Length: 399
Ligand SMILES: *Cc1c(COP(=O)(O)O)cnc(C)c1O
Image (cartoon, rainbow, N blue to C red; front, side):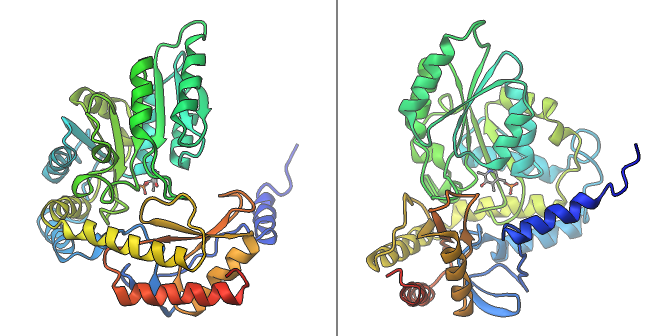
């Protein structure tokens, strides 16, 4: 039977989203992502970028990208396994492994590509994947590509994980492998996974640990080395440390660090890695420079934390709730979705750019303004932001 309007669903579904106010209204950043920037033609203070250390504008990082275009061109010409494996890609992996204190690292095009490409290769039919209930969408999609059984444990709850693992041991036939996956830092609340407890449970039950440290790198641990360093865990305890160059590193690209065996396996098995063009030289060179900056200029991570403490304390002392935040992700709890949206648009009018996070991303009554701190914000910037939160909080009767 002929379908009369085979694409009609596109508009119908979209209109439904608009009606429910669930559609994304894209704002345009005119110029660089800096604390003082221009969004939709308005000068604002940026409080919602993942560019924690303003690395995307660091002169050494920009210089490295420009130089690499001059020496290596604009593109790599191929996928890594054929003709697109440049010296810059190899050097980046060597530098990253050294930075992470790992035997080896592998760079993917994005963090999403790393999760989608690697997770289904680590666990398949006859295996079990155990996830924190609030894991990132790219982990969820990676898990969906696997034929393994799935289980979830309560958010950041190593005791509940233990129960899930004990129950899994009764499964017949016995699971071949068990893979535990967690975000390092959770991006909605800014809380930190109890990776020490998770690793201990994994050890007791012979499971592997996979941590996605997208929001922990450049933030947690010695010199921003991430969550494994933060908990001072050994490489054997957390076998797969995944991350991204798109957040604190300020560029783009995913990566995985661990044993040489892991990297050999991952590069031969991950289809997102094998079948997708490698990074342009400018990207690889900029990422190398970003690692270099992190190693040589510890002040950026320090400034990020000083700003975080100052802002969080200021927000809390007004009477706002910042939930479970332990990191530079500082959610300001508002309550209802409508109020959070109103709050955000009033902030924007006052020159503060911070987005509301509402249902279905968080529970209906847990809508919030999610702020993300930055090392390059000045005390004056933070005071201005705090004053705006106070003003809008009073206007809307929240304070
Ligand atoms: C941002 C993010 C990703 C995706 O990383 P990209 O490199 O931007 O694709 C994956 N996992 C988590 C937890 C993230 O926050």
